[in-house]
Amino acid sequence: MREFDAVIFDLDGVICYTDEYHYQAWKAMADSIGVYFDREINNRLRGVSRMASLEIVLERAERKFSQAEKEVLADQKNELYKKLLANMSPSELSDEVKSTLDELRGRGYLLAIGSSSKNAPFILRQIGLGDYFDAVSDGNNITHSKPDPEVFVKAAEMLSLPAERCLVVEDAVSGAEAAHRGGMQAACVGDASRAGAGDYNMKSVKDLLEIL
Image 1 (tube, rainbow, N blue to C red):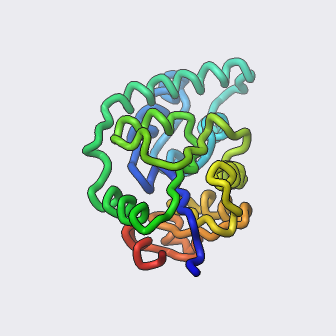
Image 2: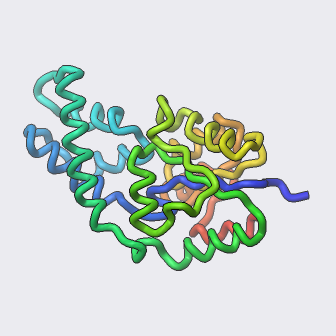
């Protein structure tokens, strides 16, 4: 009997890459209020919710911002980000990722998304995967961002599977931690793989085909 029945994928950094769009949007927002922002700070925002990311961005601010002001700034960043996302197309879904997904589906695995982003449905549509996944758990149905396990726990619930039957694929250490806290194993790529954060640390998503 195989170990897993489903694979839950983080979106950004695993299925596609929107880091540059995030960076440009946060940078424009930070510049508008005179707060220093660079790529190193941007890297700390990976896998973190919008409001939690804003708190990190505002660490260098010279004054305190009210909750109402923070909400305006977060909305400003998101509007900039969505305008940039409109440039995304199916060409940004790599052949390697798509063929891996198709092979896993052919082997009978359920496939889901577990992303902190509220823009996940829009991004999936832009890259041609709007109706592809069996479940999408994202920033629209959670109250706690990674490393809290909520997004993955809800994905498993949507699939009607126990946590231990789901393998999470992540590129962020906080995401791997979220998977473990939710009672799931993690297969990691990118930063999380280099940090040894996963139960399986891969060079690329296609390595899943050797694991499953």
